[in-house]
Image (cartoon, rainbow, N blue to C red; front, side, top):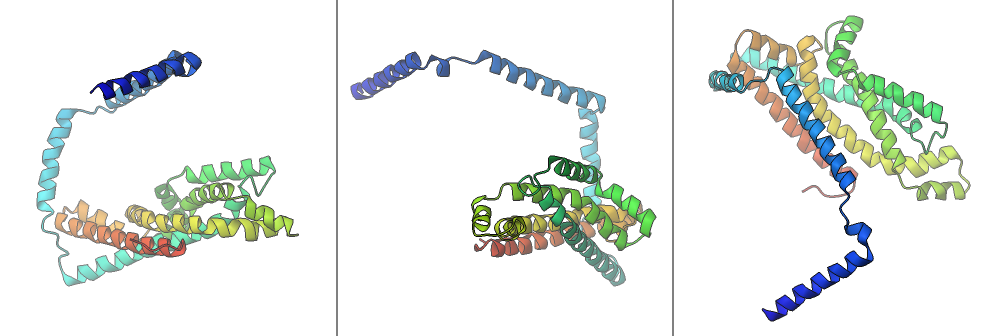
Length: 289
C-alpha cells in the first residue's frame, strides 16, 4: 500500500512540475469552452424550434405507433397473389436492378474525366476548377426524383427515363468523389513519371489513375447498391421498375403484396451488397471475410 502511495505522490509531483514548466497547456481555455457551449446551445435551440415548428407531438407519435402496428399486422404473411403477378413483380424487380446498374455505370463513366479535371493537382487553373465544381454542386443539389420527373417529360415514361435520372444525379456526386480521390493520391509516383521524362498527361495516366482506380471502383459498387433503393423510389413517378407496382398496391391497400415486394427489394439489396463486397476485396487485392 505504501508503494502505491509513493507512486501516486511521485505522479502528482511530476504533474505539478509539468504544470509549472508549461502553464499554458494546463490552463483551461475558457474562451474555447464558451464558444463550444454557445455552439451547443444554438444547435439545441434549433432542434427544439424544429420540433415545435413541425408540430411534432408525442401523443401523435404514440397514436401513430398503434396505427403502424395495425398496418404491420395486415401485412403478414407476405403474399404475391397469383402466379401471374409473381412474374410481373420479378420482371419489375429486374427492371429496377437494371436501372440502378446502367444508371450508375453511365454516371460514373461521364463523371470520370470531369472528376480528374476538377482535382487541383491536375488542373492548376483555379477558375476552371471553380466552374467545374460549382457545376457538380448544381447537378448534385437536385434529387434523383426531380431528375426523373424532368426526364419523363423529355423522353417519356419508362425505364429509360429512370436510367437517365440515376445517371444525371450521380454525375455530380461521382465527380466530387473522384476529384477528392485524385487530390489525396500519393505524389511520389507522379514525380517519378515526370522525372523519367514523361509528360503531364503521362503523369496522370501512369501516376495518378492507377492509384485511384480501386477507390473509384469501391465507390461505384456502393452506389449500385444505394441506387437500387433510389430506382425503386423513382419508379413511383413512372420511371420504370417495381416502384410503380409498389405504389399501386399501397393505394389499393393490398398490404400483403406490399410486404412481399418489400422483402424482394431487401433480398435484392442484400445480394448486391454481398456481391459488391466480394468484388471490392478482389479489386483491392485482399480476401473478403
